[in-house]
Image 1: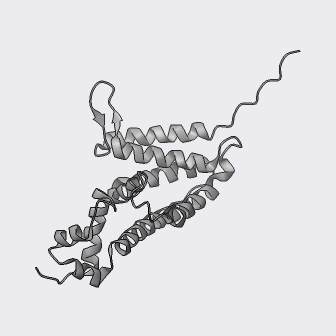
Image 2: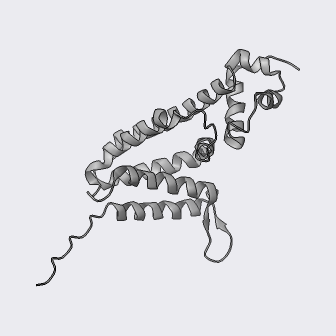
Image 3: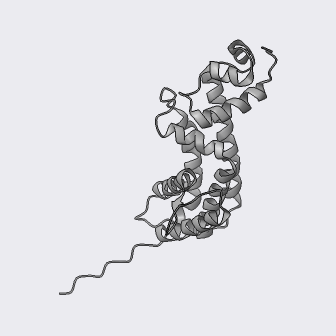
Length: 204
C-alpha cells in the first residue's frame, strides 16, 4: 500500500469516521484501511487516534465559535437576539452535520475517557451566549437552561425529525420542515422569555 498521505487528508477521513462511528467505534486500523495506508503512516503525519480526535473536536469547536461570536456581536438588542441566535445555531448544524454527530456520540458516553471537552469547548460558547441574552430572560428562567433547551431541541430535530400529523416523519432534509421547526423554536423561546404573571393577592 502507498504511504503518502497529508495531514489534511487524514483529518478529512477521521472527521467522517468519528462522526459516523464515534471515537470508540473507530480504530487506527480502520482509519488506515479507509485511506489505503498503514497505521504507521497515519501516526507519522497526524498522531495517534486520541490526537486525531482532539484535533477533530477542536476544529468543530472553532467553526462553531466563529459562528456564535459573529452572531452574538452582531445581534440586535433584546428578544431579537434570542431569535437570531436560534436561527444561526440551527442553520449552522443543518449545514455542518458532522459537528452535530460528533457531539451526539459524546452524549451517549462515546470517548468517555476524554472528559474535559465539554468544559473546554461547550462551556465558553454557552457563557458567551448567556451573557448576551441575560437581560431579557425573566427572573424565573435560567439562561443556561433556556439555551440548553435550544440545544436539545435543535439536535433532537436534526437527529430524529418530527412526526407528521398523519404518517411519516418531517426531517431536516426537507426545507419546509426546517422552516416549521424554526417557527416553533421562535414561539418556544418567546414563551420562555415571557415573565410569569404576578399572582393575585388572595381575597380576604
